[in-house]
Length: 90
Image (cartoon, rainbow, N blue to C red; front, side, top):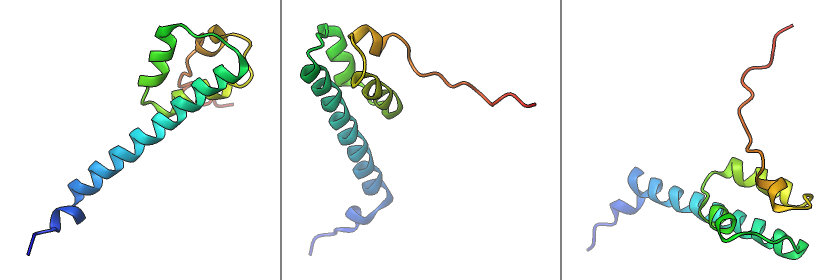
């Protein structure tokens, strides 16, 4: 009988999780590109490559939120989200 213990091992779960994260990023990237296409906003090949290869979910969410309201691609990619740090204390 074959040893199937790998399929329930922590390493196997880690590999599956990496695949799920990559799959989610690909779906978000497709959604962003679709939003641009539906809205008739032209992208350069570099912009399309940037979206298609991005694996940062926070950045993808940021781009999507802008892609649905922006008038130009430059508005979407003009400012990247930054960590504002801790809120100032009063």
